[in-house]
Length: 78
Image 1 (cartoon, helix red, strand yellow):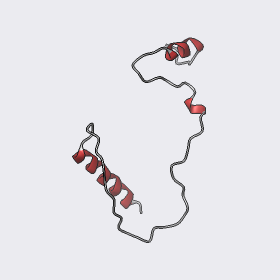
Image 2 (cartoon, one colour):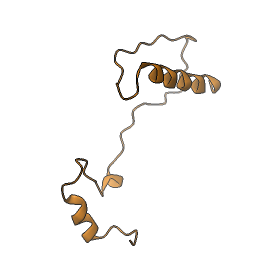
Image 3 (cartoon, helix red, strand yellow):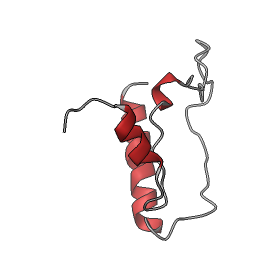
């Protein structure tokens, strides 16, 4: 193991495996922004949200807990 992505390694990565292919050149792709900082503040201090679907892998309780924790982190810095 050299840690160098050489042609032999790339060829092995292209072979069919567990169903999830590797993409050796992803770092060259341009990232898309999922939000834009506008410098504006929200007028509202309370927001409402709803969850329509839960993944069975995580479950309703853990999903709600993760979202609550995310809002707590957000609240501490705003």
